[in-house]
Every structure is written in C-alpha cells, then in structure tokens.
Length: 218
Image (cartoon, rainbow, N blue to C red; front, side, top):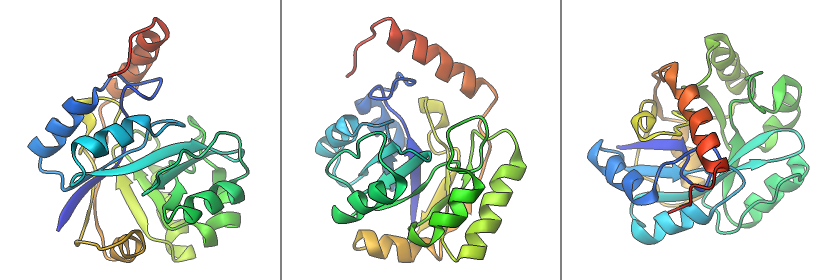
C-alpha cells in the first residue's frame, strides 16, 4: 500500500517557501510512497522534483479555471489560468492526466462551489473530499456526501504549504500502473484525515509576504 500526499506546494507557489529538495527529503522521512506537487498555476517545481525523484513525485498543478481551482495530476504541460472548467478538464485528459476540484465548497478559497460540483461532477476523476486546511468540517462532509452521490472517488489531502503540514492527511491506495488505474485504486482507498493547526494559515500569509519581497525560488 502507498501513503500519498496529493496536495502540496513549494516555493514555485506564491504562498509557500518550501524548497523542492527539502520537500523530497521530508516526504521520504515520513514514509510517503508518492507525493503530488500541486503549485498554483505552475508545474516548474513539480518537474524539477520529478527529475530529482521520479519514483516519488507525481507532477501536478492546482490550476485556476473560470469556475475555481482544479487539481491536476500526471501532466507534462501547464494548464493556463482562466480556462473554462470544461476546457481545462479536456486539456488534462488530452495529456493522459486526471483531475478534480480542490476544496470545492470552501468559501474562504476559490472552490468551484456546489452548483458547479454537481454540474461537472460526471467529468471529474476524483473530488477532494477532505482538505486539512478547511476550518468548517461541514464543508468537507458535504463534499464527501456529494462525491458519494455522484459515484466519484474522494481524496484526502493536507494542502500543505509548509514542511510540517506534509502528510498530515493522506490517501492510502494500492500500487497502480497508470493514471487510469490510479483512479480505480482511489475507489478502494483508505482516507486518513487530520486537520492542520490554525497556524498553517498564518504561515501561508507570511510566505506570501516573503515572496512579494523578492525571495527567490529554488
């Protein structure tokens, strides 16, 4: 079985200071079998990480569509900002990748919302049904209920912006052979949810300030 972190950020996101080599080392130390790097509107850090640790890294992106944010996995080309959700999904699938909405019902962040979750649900490969940074547990529970209603597998993530958050929440699946088999494995996954500390949001704000002051990427 593989413990997987499916939502984390590096210094290639504007609100994180995590260095790619440090992230790889930390992921191995805490026993993760796979790590999806999902920087905001960027895959450069994920591609670098894949070069350094191809056995560990899933190249991903948290893309910004017109309707809200979309987690994309197993991609090789960045999904541009501002696409309609249908087109973004098409572009991910054209690369052989898979995708689903992040924190879809969280009013504090740019989730796609209930209406779009129901409208596009048949097109998603998965739905993020537990996000460790959501403060209203009911939003996670509602997303999980909708996923069950739609018959779409759920994933459990940390949405880590700091090293300390990585792996707080995990999705545990069997070994898989392809992105499509990954989706099949998700249907039998064990979700291991834990909420991140309140200080996680403060760390993100401080990282965003540091980035705006010109701290470089690594």
